[in-house]
Length: 353
Image (cartoon, rainbow, N blue to C red; front, side):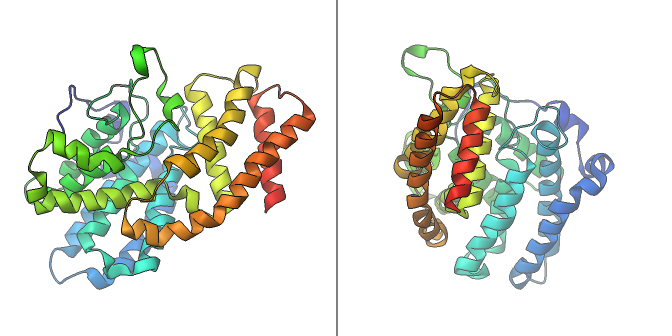
């Protein structure tokens, strides 16, 4: 790995249960239909990049890794799970792997990147959020969930037939892409106790700091063309991960509400109780505004060309949403629960469509 980390993250029960493609298919059955359809559609779009040799094996290995990662996230935190996460579930894989990468292709064409680059972005979509329950631990700016996800991803690549030497470009790209997807993982000043969920909107993606991190931890990296290229892909990956800001406004609002629900769950606040009312209101107003207008940036040329205009189109509506939600709450009086705030939020969104 490109950064040195203080500990390792061994396989958990889900990784052991869904150890390979055969186990995944036995467990999942028809529940793989969505990801299988997305994989088939992507193979069709990549056809013009496929050469006479090697491409079939490459795509087969990538497809198998993505399918396994999809099943593991669904099993841990998605629709197959008893620990459902409203945002970080298999649907997040589908929206990045499917809709958002498709938008990159439509914006600049399939030849904007190589076949292996598109494969690397697909692996990022499937693997970057594999682990979501690791104890917060800061190291080189990279979060514990990301480090655990990366280690599992490397095991998965080896398992489906990739080699760390022959396929060093994919390993290096995935390393920097998953590292760069970390949002501010630093503990608060003074070492006070904290919950990682509270930091969702406290800082931007680490991708914007990767050059500085590499300068510190890998001096001379600028002389290595492989690392420079992996960094370029990491910036594109970060843009894909946060491109909900450029989704059609109704979907953008839904993702914000789902992330809010997940945060409250991770903070162990009951949405039906009063303890969640103000945190939910703050997240859906000041928090969303700060993330959208202050923290979020597209870091790659390809990301900006694909998503920036649609983000700008959402800006005025987001301002109206925040003002409208505050006004609605003011008229109704102090909210009694997070559920009540989310209901008012949904009504406000509907009024803007």
